[in-house]
Image 1: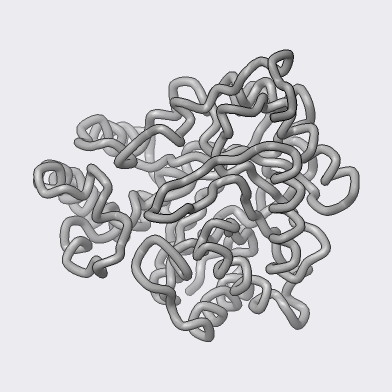
Image 2: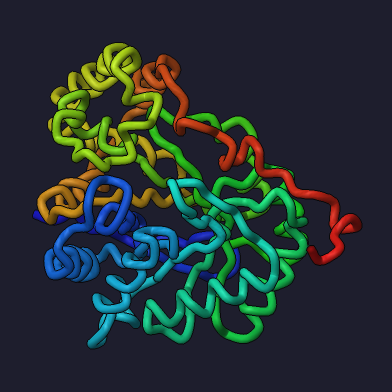
Length: 342
């Protein structure tokens, strides 16, 4: 029997979403070659029909192809059933290098290009995907505020933003949600970012709540990585760290067996238990995995089980990314008085 999904308020501006979302990145990007379009549209439709209506994409996924996919999936009466989030500002250049942009002209051009690919008039939640440390956040937010006033976006979000950036952005226009990596093996945001969001009434969207698949499958996951899977470059998936980190997965497996659920359901349930302002967005390309993820909503954890699980997370080896340059740790922006429009 499918678990009841339920709804939640995300942030303080009126956005309501399903209590769990669907991360769509892996359908087009990062974890190997693009998946067959018809199969992915079937997963998206199954998600919506199951009550998971909060869909997450970005212009950089593909790049561009993930938004095109969602545009096709949301035709024929599906659009009004979903809360769609997309992102801008994280640009892939040649040889895998990235450029981060938050200047007003780019913000507007990116939004209009996304609307075209998505075949929409309005994006429900529009995030700055990564923070441009050359542009004062007030300048970026000023343009986003105009897009809200013009009806091109409904709500504004930030992803991988520092606490000071969140505060400064929120002072220009209310931030509805901050997207950050949060899971049993990524807990660095708990010290500063999450308390800041809660103080300001900002919703929290947890990406990679299953540790990019490691908390679902453990080390065996690495055997199925295609040649172009980006996780191969991640420190936690390097041989010297996997050997250590597999112990965390083994303990999660033991506890999940005791609970009568899967490791993935246990790890996801832990994120759900962080509060009613938190929406995890696990991604998948398979309906059976999607159904398993929904089952996490039925897993109830006792306080002592939460403590037991949290003790494991302190023992992870390896950083979240090969470089933390584009994460919240380095996401402060210049003072607006220094901005000359360049």
